[in-house]
Length: 188
Image 1: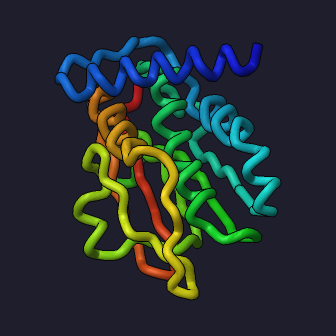
Image 2: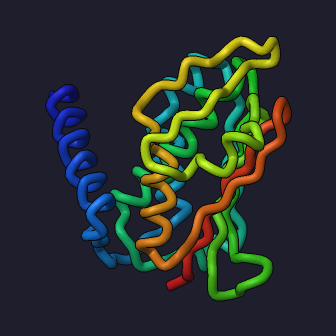
């Protein structure tokens, strides 16, 4: 049953990616409690977190205002890609912080940040990370190439989902120190 669910989700995701590439991607507009959504995403990757003996902290401020109109499934998908990347590119025993709250500069927006102390992203790769099918050249602290999993679509998907919600996704990174991905979405 679990494998059928996974296969079903993969088919839906492939259809969504196809729509994204064709410019025909649309989202639902239902009320979403972002704190609850973030807990669901983090709990969904708990096995990977435990396997790598990582610390993941979820911090939410302004919790009564963390509501938007959007597509719960696709936001979970987008944020899941970012958090899974953080897990994958952070060494065992590393740390990830997921935070959410009202944007400091725009009171009618919500900011979600995913911060890790992973390998970071090189400047060469940074300008391409949101491109479809782009896979960078990540290396661990010893300079060994980390074999990137997947097809290089996760960050493309995450940015497209953010933009479909009239938001945006940005990234900052320092090699060897980690990365910060920030999704900003309009508040309900």
